Image (cartoon, rainbow, N blue to C red; front, side):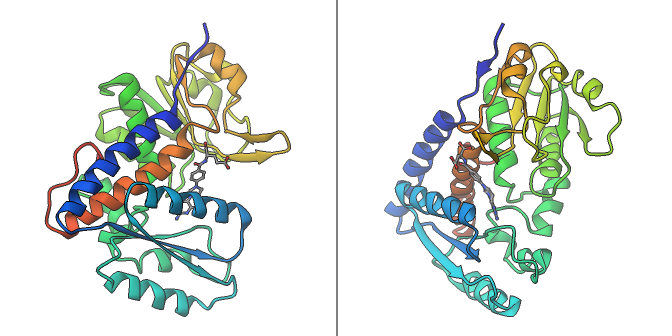
Length: 291
Ligand SMILES: Nc1nc(=O)c2c([nH]1)NC[C@@H]1CN(c3ccc(C(=O)N[C@@H](CCC(=O)O)C(=O)O)cc3)C=[N+]21
């Protein structure tokens, strides 16, 4: 039996349509959400993401502000820009594209963003709020994965979930969200012993390691739901962290790369921008966009 494909691209398009409708309703009340994206340096892959983010922001009816700084910009200058965006009432969300050049302190830059405008959910206050069950801005990629999992499985309660990868931007917040939904969560990483055996126990397997084809087909529990967060550029094109052809034979459902988690990340960035805008105006959280 081959797995059902989880069409993240289509799901993201539907999500953006709902965001566009809710944005239109806000605009009727004189409120236009604004997203500022800051790009430091010339990384060509980053530029592609920034462009498609900017295009989709405008497509859902929001204002998009792009700030491009040279790679050698002093950190103080970036902090000054963030301070201005923090104070700008037209800006509801701020995204500083990562990674930053090596001379910058990434944590210091991220924590300079007002937590209410931190649409990436990377600020330490948002990480702490998520971990303690308080209203937070939730990181876009894990939020998108959660939406796909709930759509596929309904109630996640009691399911065994293995998250491979312990980064602050994917692995840890993903584990927090699954825990909130009452999964039994294991975070695996490079030092984990007998990872294949651990994975074989997972009803839900989330791969976020950044290594092409790292997860093999015979690691997958028959019928499991596999979410591939990896975006690896190799000679043959874009591939995930999961050996897709192998995993497809065992899994119940699996996200492809491209067309899986990636488009959900951008849609959830817009969802977070809408949420931030609603909160900034004392309105209730938009329907269906927060965990
Ligand atoms: N502060 C910050 N926030 C981010 O969210 C962030 C970041 N920095 N730095 C870079 C990474 C990368 N990232 C992607 C988002 C969407 C796709 C995406 O939509 N990918 C398409 C394919 C795109 C293609 O073909 O190149 C897909 O998977 O189907 C990819 C990558 C967000 N990032």
